[in-house]
Image 1 (cartoon, one colour):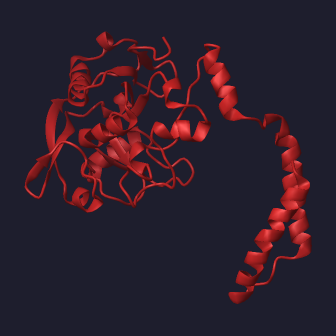
Image 2 (image 1 turned 120 degrees about the vertical axis):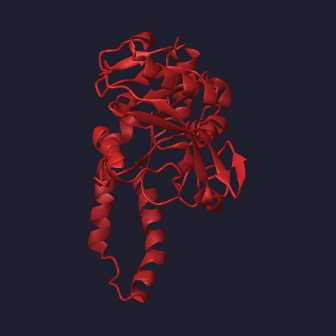
Image 3 (image 1 turned 45 degrees about the vertical axis):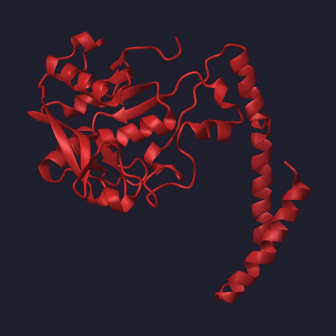
Length: 280
């Protein structure tokens, strides 16, 4: 939206980039290519101009007017640059505090923090994964939960629910409650397990270790629960779930110390049990 400033910034970049290209045997970027890129950017600016504004101010006004505002984190807490399983992390803050940093509103403007967790654990890419399952059981969860990367199609690694890792997410985000997804994926299992603690070098710990090398040596300690065979899709309250599923949910609440806001029992929007509306 500022053509002259854009051209100045591009020119500054070219002063650095073209010598590097020449050093590595490449051709300098042509004037025609530069002009085409600038024209594309200016055209995009015209299309986007009406959406550009002071986001923090807009959000603050909306909150002051009593409107519901929902911030969504796109990546898991353990991918946080500062508090995640470094170096297997992303490049930014993925915890609830990052909402304020990125949006321009203060922390006192947030009323509730809801953590979203699957009824089991998944991980994409490399890194320690103490509860990871192998073989047919892992493939059952992967297939039932459609655990494949949305962009790459890469199979996700699957394992039992990891409460020590969940406790870290609860602490660093200050969670008021949980939204549990994919409870239905655990159906048809005779036995379901929850990792309740780790043993690291002979010592029991109840939270994921801060050092990734310690995490790689962690041995999970499990609690076992009976499974269920019933289809959960028709349930619209916790009371309508099978007893075994209710026992599993009660164990998670007891182990984490936080209640459920939402429990998902299927892929459809209607297949959601709202235990407590966070906007109420």
